[in-house]
Amino acid sequence: MLKKRKFPIAEIYVPAKRKKTLDPAKVEEIAESIIELGQTTPIRLRAGKGRFVLLEGLHRLEALRALGEDSVEGYLVQARMH
Image (cartoon, rainbow, N blue to C red; front, side):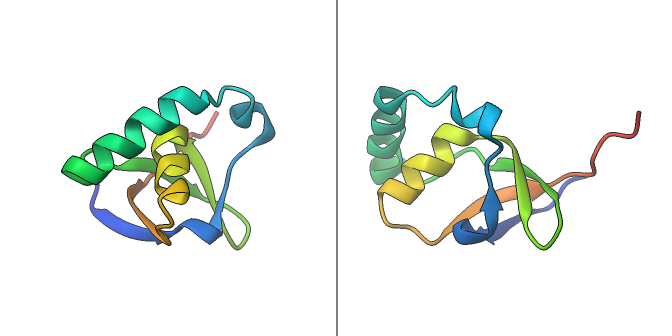
C-alpha cells in the first residue's frame, strides 16, 4: 500500500507535455476548494534524477503553488517497467 507523505513543491518537475494541459480556471477552482477543505486528494510522483517527476495531479500542484504553499501531499510510486 502506498504511504502518503509531504513533498517540497520546489523539487517537483512537471514534464512539458503535461504542462500543456494546464487549465487556469480549474487551478482557481481547486485552489478555492483547498482553502475551504484542505488538500483532499494526494498527487502521484516518481523519483527522477535528484527530483520528483509529476505523474498525476498537475492542477492540484499548481493550485497549492498559487496559494503560496511550499509542500504538497502525495504518493511516491515506482516507474513502470516496459
